[in-house]
Length: 366
Image (cartoon, rainbow, N blue to C red; front, side, top):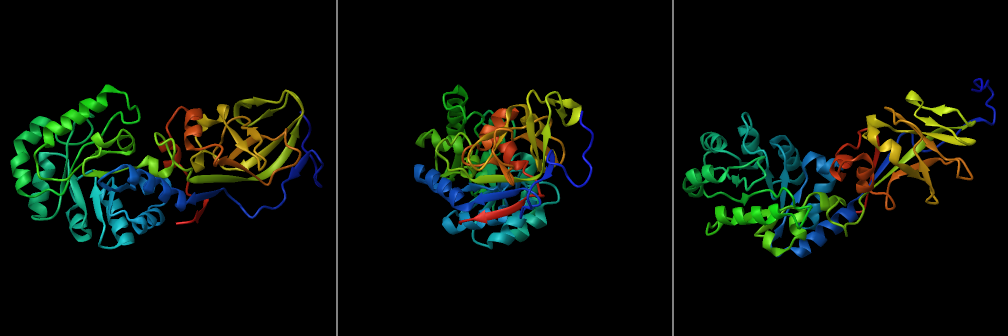
């Protein structure tokens, strides 16, 4: 192991040239989001809503939803009433905002004051809504086999006539295996949805992104794509939406046998140049990405992660570059959210929704 260099810096320990970035820059392409939504909308004969829960999958509900509304989206889905109230403040009174979690205790004022439409999931929620907000719009979520949210067939049969007497705005269910179009669960759930809703004079919605792609049998009156709008699977033709560039703080040389990071997880087997970038799992870059992932230089050269991803820093092997980079790219057109998800053994949804608050967020288009 070499001794630490004394000031002034020697050639073996250099600081990268000053960069305009002090943290990573997350660029969100609103035009790509709109192109993806329009492409999915073109596949559906009915209305196409947009799912913007979890801060629009981590990309910023306010900017994303405003762009989608300007492009023609008239209905939006969120997870909880608090998300819906914030969205109403952004979009104004016109769009319909549906709440997947339904009417939870304490939500009545928020639902009533901001004009949200809770998707009632149980008899208890139905009673709560009727007592707290008589005459206020609502929808019904039905469980067709996912066993997550919604009324099961027996419960729905018991309350259906009462519910229909109050004129629900929408009937929905959720597909468990839509990202696997040949999975028998899809047809099973489609059949169950027909059995529970056919002949009822209420708009219906079953299709998420995967459901849109499976064709018109799943479309009904409304589709509600989510992940496909943001550039993820199973929408293979989606335009990439996010780019993440990470600034290099420092570069150093290693002799063969020297190590990098916690637990000596990387050992240099040749004279090696290491760049340390300003990001880590505190910014949503999952530790599990490390052994399989690379960052990309401007010319497209893949620079492997060296050692463990730590909270704020990542070591990157830049030996094969002919210069010290000012920044390296983790996400972009050549390496998308699903590529990183594969490396980490997870899904693109988690990559997107984990993106941290420290990034400089830059929106283009829209």
